[in-house]
Length: 354
Ligand code: GAL
Image (cartoon, rainbow, N blue to C red):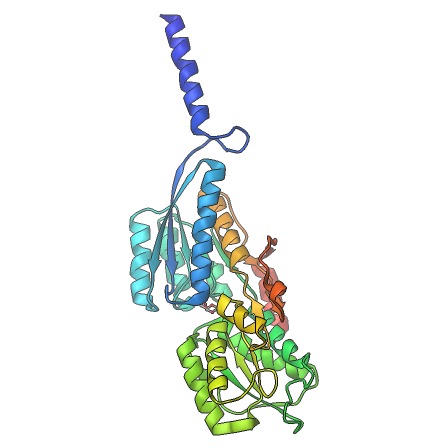
C-alpha cells in the first residue's frame, strides 16, 4: 500500500512538472490572471498598433511562464461615461489588474480610487494624467508612456534641419499651421507647443497662420482642414505640424490635390510612424515623423502589470523614448529599456520646464 502511495505521489509530481512546461523557463505557478484593458477608442491607428502588440506580448509571456493571461479588451468609443462603466465592470468582476488608456485623463483620480477600494492595481497608458492623480495609490499604480515634449521638439528640429529651415518662400519667417489632436490630451498640447519652441530655440523666426485646427487625430479631418488652409493662405503656408501621422497623411492628400509638392514647396511632419506615413516618407512625400514606440510601451505596460499581479510594488512612471524618423530604417522596432521616475523627480522636472 505504502509503495502505491509513493508511486502516486511521484506520478503527481511528474504531472505538475509537465504542466509547468520546460523546466527552468517557468516559475512553476501556472496561474490564470484576468487582465482588464480599457482603450479610449478602437478606431485609432496608433492605439490599434499598441493594442495588437499588447495582445501578442501577453500571449508570449503566457507561453514563456506557463501562466495564462486572459485579456478582456473594451472599446471606450471616445466616451468617458462608457469607459467608466467598462472599468466599473472590471472592478465588479474582480480582475487582477486594470490597464487603462483613458478617454479623459481627468477621470484618473476617481478610477484609481474605485480600483484601490477593491484592491485592484492600475496601469495607465498613453494619456498622461496629472501628477496628483499618480500620488493617490503609489506602488500600485503606474503611468507608462512617452514624453510628448520630446516628440514636439523632434518635429521642430526636423524642420530646422531641412535646406530652407522651413522658410521655403524666403521671406524670413516660417509660416505654419498645426493640426491638433484633442484638447484633453497632453500629447496634443505639448507637441503643439514644443514643435514651434524648437524652431524658436534654433533662432528661426516663425508665425502661425491660424489657431491650431482641431482635427481629433483623424485623417479625413486633417485633409479637410489642410485643404481649407491651402485655399486661404496659398503659398504663404510653408509648414504643416501634425500632432500625429493620421492627420499628416490627410494633409499630404490635400497638398497633392492642390497641386503642391511636399519637400519642394511645403513641409509636413507627423508623429507615430504608422505604416501609411512610412510609405509616404519612403516616397519622399512626408518630411519626417517621430516613432511613438508602441512596441516598447506595450511591453513595458504588460511587464508592469505582471509585477503588480504578482503583488509587487512598482514605480509611478515608466518612459519610453521617441525616435526621430527621416528615413525608413529609423523607425525600426527594437527592445528598449524604460526609464523610471519617482513622483518627486517628475515634479522637479515639470517645474523646471516652466
Ligand atoms: C497619441 C498618438 C495619437 C493618438 C493618441 C491617442 O500618442 O500619437 O495618434 O493615438 O495618442 O491618445
